[in-house]
Every structure is written in structure tokens, then in C-alpha cells.
Length: 520
Image 1 (cartoon, rainbow, N blue to C red):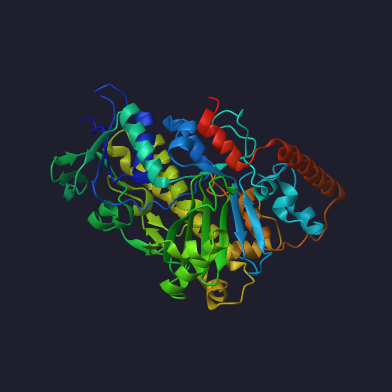
Image 2 (cartoon, one colour; image 1 turned 180 degrees about the vertical axis):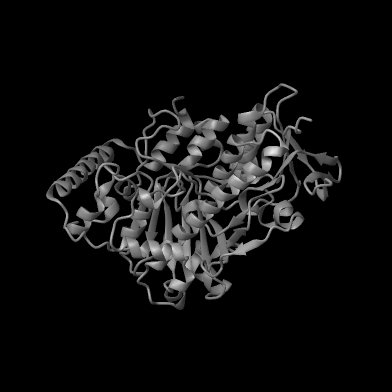
């Protein structure tokens, strides 16, 4: 008897996670043919979307292109802006002049030379990012990563997006319904039914009866209705590593309509957490992330409004309202159980740092679309591989985000002192830091061909935080020094060309909204 094919995929939950997953699955597998795979998205008509994930990774460009979204449409409909990396302020010493960049471009000559050792040997007071790439210079000047003549999704400097995630979900929904044959059901789910062997059989809704499927995707957010509640998959808390468990979010207006717009995320540390600042064309998304064990809500709100007052004044900042979001940092023990896959917050959430939430949605949905099981018989094999890869991704993100905390020199609060305790870091991260004191992070430290964060990202954060790797005992060979300095000189020349040729972030976005970008 032939195994039953996987034909009906049911996604529970909308928002960015649900519609990105629906879009990728439908773009890959749905057609007008009655025998093709069918994707149905079920969501409650009145469950609010969290909607604060406003930063993305460059991978989002490929994801949207694969789904068939126009980049011009993205900018016009989702209040989108360019993101070229992150600026970390006050994470090392807490002083006013304390900042470094994690750009999105690779260092110039990265694949052909060791740039770190020569920079450590003689950097003339220049930061690592400034010495090896152009992007930190572009960000400091508020410049865009491309020109209006650059085609959609192409770039001069690598980039991601800042965007309104609620509007992104709405745009994806319309595209999925109009172009990709996704079936949409707005209804409340009262119960989940099971087959005799324990798989999910269907979702019992109030008005549409039972919606059956072969494979179910849980995009229900922190409630994790299927993976967590129905199957009881254990939640693994990471509160011992990440102390933050609360965020206060608010929308901050610009002082004037055409005020300069940052082309990077600004992450500013405070005494018990940090503040995100994401510039969109019409407003800024600003929020304070903090640990309730070290700071109460009133103090966090005071810090947040003091930050906002620097740009709009004390009176206007006092009028702004905050939305409180509580979370337990961690993830599910597995992400694919039986015939159910958790994607988005239903699988887990650590904290907003480095926009890791949306990139995990993209990765999970992309792997599912690429490896969609042909039938139930092979599903467990694919699920096992999926869980192995996603567990590696989560472990990597845990270590990479913790890296931002463990190297601080701040001693102004117990929060920062406690983050430096090695018992709050994984053994993998502690071992890596011990190794990297004697050798530069390299590709052999990161075994996957598709790493969540390549070794360049680790180098930007490590050496931005003031980490020191001892030079090799044999010294640095003169030819290697010469080659590295040649690349650094070329990077400086490239920077000057780009600074002279690129528009500001706001100038380019205004043009995109008015004229649109060239199609690829």
C-alpha cells in the first residue's frame, strides 16, 4: 500500500511568521492543479499581533524575492527603510564615546587575508569595522546602501530592512491570497483532534467545522497552541543566560517630517538592559529591554522616555505611551514533533537583540519548503534532521547574543557584573573565548555552510568589544601584513567613492516611494 502523500498543509496563526511560512510553502508547491499541495492558513479574527519585530537580516531580500514580492511594493506599503547593521552604544564602558558597529558587509579581502592580526598590531586608533569595511562609515553619515538606479534587491553595500512588521503581515497576506493560491480562514479554534496514532487530525473551529490536514504549522506566537499546549513539548528556559524578560515599546515621532533617518539599528545599553532604536520613514520604533530582576517597570519607562526626549524634547516624550511585553527567554525542546512544526514565537524567543526572531522564521520556513516530506512515512526522518539543524541554530544564537554581554567592562550595576560570570554562559562559548585569545575566529570554528552568523559577525562583535587575540608566537609574516594593509587601503578608497556617490537613507526612500526601483 502506497504511503499517504502530504497534500494539505494547515498553518495556525497569521502575522509575519504565519504569512512568511505560507508564502514560501505556496511559492514552492502550490499551483492551480487540483492534485497539487494546498496551503490553508487559519487565524482568529481578534487575536492581536505582537508586531515589534521591526528589524530583519539580509536574508529577507532573498525570501521576499522567492515569494514574488516587489521591493518597491515593500517600501511603499510596509513603511520600510534600509538597515546596514547595528550600532552598539555604551556596551563596553558605558561612556558617551563608547560605540562600535556590526556591519552587514564582509570585511574587504575577508576570504583572502587575516585582517584581524594586522589591525591588532597597528590600527592607529581606528575601530575594526572602520578599518576593514566601508559600511560603518556609511552608517555614521546616514547614507543608503544603493542608488535609485540600482535594481530591486541588488545592492552596492549589503543590506536588510527596518519595517512595520504588522504591515508586512498584511502585505504578505494579500499577496498569498491573490497570487499564491493560499486558502485563508478567519475563525476561532476551539479544539484540536488527533488520529489514532497521535498525530494532529484537525482543528475544530466555531464556524467552519473541522479543518483537517496532513501537516500542521504552529505560528500561534508565545501561546504555542499546538507544539506547546497540545503536544506538551517542553519549554527550555534560557533565563540563566539571558536575564532580560520584559520590553517596553513605543512609537517616537521625528522632530520634523524630513529629519535624517538612521540606516542601522541603534542599540544603547542602560544599567539593566538596552534600548532599541529603529528608524522607519514615518516614525521610530523605540523600546527598552530589561530584566525585571534588576529593574522595575517605572524605572525602565523613565529611562526610555529620557532617551526619547533627547530628540523630541521632555514634554513630547512624556506624552508617549508604552506597550509592555513580557517574555521568558528560551525555546521548545524540539521544533518538529510528529506532524507539527513550530515556527516563530511558538518555537521560542530569546530577546530582540540582532533581529534573530525573524531570521529564524525565514530559516525554518525555508527549510520546510525545501524539505517538505512527500508522505508521512518519511516525515520523521525529515523532522529529525530539521530538529538537529534548528537546535544548532538556536545554540549558535544563544552564544552569539551572549557574546555582546560577556565582554563588557561595565561595573556600574550588578546586571553587567553578573553577565560576566562564566557560569551564565554555555561551555561552548567559554571554550571558544579561551581559544580565540590565542587564535582568530575562522571558518573551521563554524561547521555549517549556512551559518546563522558567519565568522565575520563574531569578529565584528569580539573586536568591537575590545577583545584581544594574542599574536602568534612566530609573529606576523611581513607579506601577510602587506597584503592585509593593501586590503585596508582599498577599503578606505572604496569608502571615499561610496561616500561621494550614495544618497542619504531618506533621500533614496523618498525617491523609491515616488518613482519605484528598477526591476531586476
